[in-house]
Image 1 (spheres, one colour):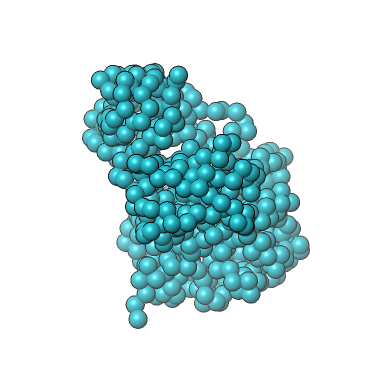
Image 2 (cartoon, rainbow, N blue to C red):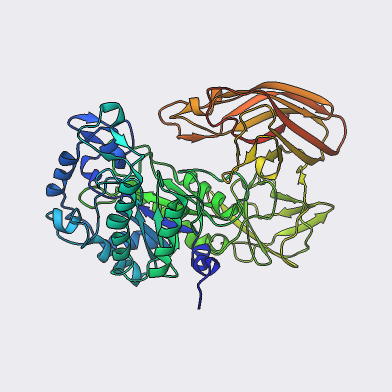
Amino acid sequence: MQVTVEDRLKWWHEARFGMFIHWGLYASLAGEWKGRKTSGIGEWIMHDMRIPIADYEALAKDFNPVRFDAEAWAELARQAGMKYLVITAKHHDGFCMFDSPSNPYNIVQQTPFKRDPMKELAAACNTRGIKMCFYYSQAQDWHADGGAGHWEEETPEKDWLHYNRPAEAFQKYLDVVVKPNIKELLSHYGPVGLLWFDTPVGITKAQSEDLRDFVHSLQPECLVSGRVGHDVGDYGSLGDNEHPEGKVRGAWETPATLNDTWGYMTDDHNWKSLEYLLELLVNCASKGVNYLLNIGPTAEGVVPPPSVDVLTQIGSWLRRNGEAIYGSSASPFFVDPEWGRITTKGNTLNLLVKKWPEDGQVSLVGLKNAVRNARVLGVDGARVGVMQNGDTVTLSLPGAAPEKLVSVVILELDGVPDVEAIIIQNAGSAIRLPVAAAEIGGSAKASRGGHTEGWKDTTGSAKWTFRLHQPGTYEITAITFGRKRVPERFGNHDLRISVAAQTVTGTAGVKDLDMRESAPGPQRPRSVLGKVVFREAGEYDLSVLAERLDPEASAGLSLIAVELTPAG
């Protein structure tokens, strides 16, 4: 019987939440080489600090994770409510964290540890019903001959890494290093949920397809991640720590960190709060996107206590509210309500309420279904009032929120959720017009992450139609995407926004980035462009054109949304 992509994805859609683990020789350096701190992330230290292969290889003789406890790691994943676990079997440094008969550069043969942590972890996951999965760097390998980025002694400093390897050398690397490793991982560790490939630099589409098919030939039910290259995987991967802005078509996952790095670094104490992590979890679920959250254990095999603490808290929340996350699908609405997020499951809407209303009133606009029943998770017998009037459903909730951060209200409908195909204002609130719901024209197109891409000339455009309930003056804000580490890539752009026979112009982009050290890397800078007046309720068209694009910004205009906020 042939296994389809849908067959492979069934468990993955149900899981929704997984643990990522970055662990390798780089953990022993913990972000420092010969007294110098890296300015990059932990697992890239060999690359970023130009560590010669021989010097990096020498780290193995002292790598001895005596405090590694596979049972404890798997139990932490279970307690956190995670349903699958992805660990770095081989990262870009080329060192195998498993017993590889084909590659002697591995933890069993080269370190005093002499054990295979992947085998121990696979067994521990199996007893807890957690899917064991492997990360494998299929193209980028700074150690192996032919690998993309392989270091060469005679290479000039400015070209320290060779990413464009000769075609024959790279194919030999795939045949001699990669395929034997994949066969080992899919033959010696029981059923594997997925292979999480990464950084497909230099790989051709035919080579990506060959790797995908090779995995499926060995374990037909094993998923192949989108980073195998050229969009040929079983599901896609959004950018690192990327919040999906709108509904994403197909199967997607966001990989995310608990602090700023992936591999362990002694000095990285910028731990994300429970509030931030829960927000990303429920936002991903509301877009139909899986959430893969990373830990970076120390060289001894210890998970940093702040990671343990916050994962335990997430798990506690999920034990009470997981009904709204596991097996859920994306919200049917075009925009997120200002009070939280929404997921669906059959004939049910799950309202994930972040801002519990002081007056007890929560509104949904555009729902066509009748609400048959409403309840609050964690509050037995609590009565929820339901009033449906026109395009708005108003709920009257109990006075106190059952959860400190995110509470769940379950609505049982008279059928599969059906909503109006237009953005509708919840009277008196801001109107958010996301790119995911826009009509995009010219050079621009909507990315899977929910922002525009390719918008590099003035032919690009974005247009929305929305229904306004409350006339008055509104402030117009352009929300774009940018990264703190490379602001020049996203730049600043002069925009013209037209609505209700009025036009506002202004500059939007990285001028509004938060460049503080504690600020996150990927951001959504908000640029206020001006005000417009709506004299009456009704339906309006709003369009965005670019009068000038920053010529130095290689990403072009990365527009996420336009927001209209009541200005009094």
